[in-house]
Length: 306
Image (cartoon, rainbow, N blue to C red):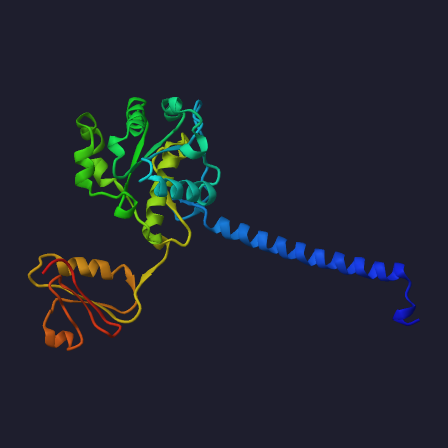
């Protein structure tokens, strides 16, 4: 018969089927999105690179009595932004199996700070304005030194987020800790924390490498080489257009350094020891700093000071 001849039960069945089909489409779309996000998240995870260039997933362990793979020691409020960023990116993306102590999530009693230090394999010290004047930060730091915990020092660079010069940090540091924290070896290993994604990836790589080295896994007794897929260190370096490094003849070693740098870059890269304006052309401009840019695709830079 015609549609008008359908019984109410037939119309109900049609509406039910339409509703079921709509729900099925929504569920299928949700599943596809979840799978995509899961795969995307896996691509962001840290990988360990062996001597042959093969990559593998990190294998995190923890020694007896260790609850946290790392403890984030930071000053409120200046160190909060860096601490939250490190915690989120390490535990949610790079090393999802790791446990990283952050006070807002894990501290129930301020009197247990020293206990949590003992329960941590690594102590990450986030150096910002006022860190060495904080009573609780000094409790954490002194406990870490007393317990002979590995330390990783991170220096905030942005003044808007509590960053201060290294000389000021050294000056603020208590006398009895200065010779421990700011040895030449530790200063060379100081990890800068930047808001720029590529530089931040370098810092996060250093954090993850330190976590693995302190985890107690014999495979990582020697700190392993680790990479964040897609980060700057894993991509070939290249510059668009023709690139020329201009070197002053009066700067000893500049030409050799520029050649070495050019050897690591892909693309049309040249090195010149001439700074003659007639060679550079009227559109090039070399200022007092020794660096210049032309409106074209050519980039001119003096390697070192001139």
